[in-house]
Length: 353
Image 1 (cartoon, rainbow, N blue to C red):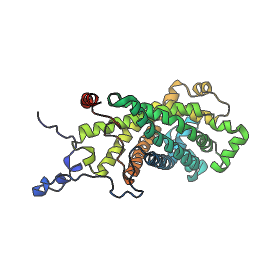
Image 2: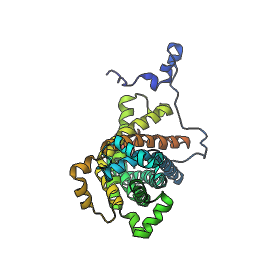
Image 3: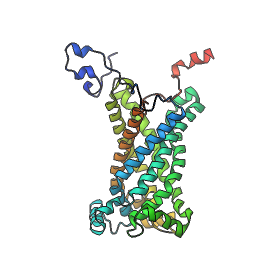
Image 4: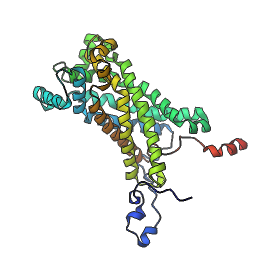
């Protein structure tokens, strides 16, 4: 049987091929391992320190990326809330610039950064926890066979908790971004909501937030894990642990971007609901559907959100995996689920038990 031909040029993953041929071309590829002296000491896989590293990496990945796209978020939210005034992406940029100046594009950055940092810590940290727990519950054979279901279940469970941390900051962010004059930012917006609606007002959008974020996160993690696995299986003939770290992080970004496009489409109707309910005091889901219309619910602001979420998700995976590499851990995906045994070895394992 002829050897499988790679779909990517060999210089991207083979140091020998990149050297230009001759005797040096026969040199074995260098295995790129994690740093031998991680800055915080070696971290054992699936130890408390491993999960803590996931939480810190997740906080950095989500907090910084969401804060960086605040201008796009301002435009998206205003198109969703007031389409008569903000008719398109280009016109919305012009309206915000004329009425609020350049500062208007950064309204709500503080609750965005804090809210999504907290969400990211729980999302990524607990995903690692639940993925391992569900893998152990399923056992080696079923964990290997149904790994996508484990990705889906682990990410959904983590997101339920993560959204409770995000919801208060999301409520403040939407008010600040879509109601000029409501508040300058987090410091006065948060207490204003509490005074007028009580602490319950901060969580009024929790159910729609779950409706947006849980499908989004399930798609984000399951799609990402599978795309990474397929990339190393079909595009790159070199085993993942023999690829350079820059190439592995490139795979993280590309896989994350593609996953983000699917995430945006799946979660967009709920995103419109969250924006509407957090902006209109006392509004219900029925009011939102009546106001937006069924088509508008699925399409209003979608192109901008695809651009935003695709870029954002790709960047998040790069930041998360870069942090893992920095502390001496492997990048995410491209390997069997943790604690699994190849199916062909199960008979021997059972016989020896």
